[in-house]
Structures are given as C-alpha cells and as structure tokens.
Length: 150
Image (cartoon, rainbow, N blue to C red):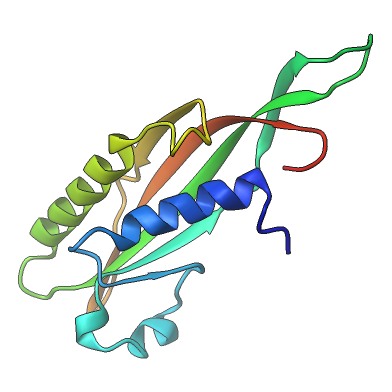
C-alpha cells in the first residue's frame, strides 16, 4: 500500500483533523455496518468513518514535451460518515457534530499545502437504524501530482 501517495496523505490529514474534534469519539477508515456499530461501546460514539474515493484527473497542467503529461490536477472526494447514538435529540447532535467538522475542515483549506482548495458538501439525507443515526459530509480537494503516482 502506497502510504506516501498524495491521495493517502490527504486522507490521513482529514483523519488527523477529525481526531482533534472533541465531539467525535472514534475515527475509523471504513464504512460501518449495523453489526460493526454494535461492537462499539457508548463512550466511543460518535464514530466517524473516513472513506476516500479515487482521484479524478483533470486537464493537463504542464508537460515539457508535446503530447506529454507530467503534472496533473486531480479532484479527490473523501466521504466522512458519522454515526451517532442519540435517542433523545438526534437532530441537535447532528447539527453540533456537522458544525464541528465543518469548522475544523475549513480552518486549513490547503491541508498543510497538500491541496489547492477545499470545498465541503453536506448530504441532506440522514440514515436511521435504531438506535443509530448517520449522516455524511464530503471533503472535496483539488490537488496537483505528477505521473509517478496518485
């Protein structure tokens, strides 16, 4: 596994930012099934699952020879699925946690100079699996890399 790829560096940057948010109990790197959620203890909630998509290469940025691509600008979407356990007021919990994530991810929009720009999308749909509630936020980054890796 290429942990040194720019894609992986960006995903790990997001993971580390989420670990700094006090309203999130646990950060994992895979989507959670209902059975996975049942294995977490109550103090480990909310659980944030970070799942990176594959980058989408954009237009050629530069090439030193005609027809040769050397530098590529790509778009990378990193989905953050947040699972909470709140039977009293899940809507308030979603608002609080989504706000905390929003503020943290927008605080450094270049992700330590790994990316050119960051935009966030909140998915308006929530999922409910008694006693769990889930929502999704997507971190979209534009970044530059070469033909030696993603």
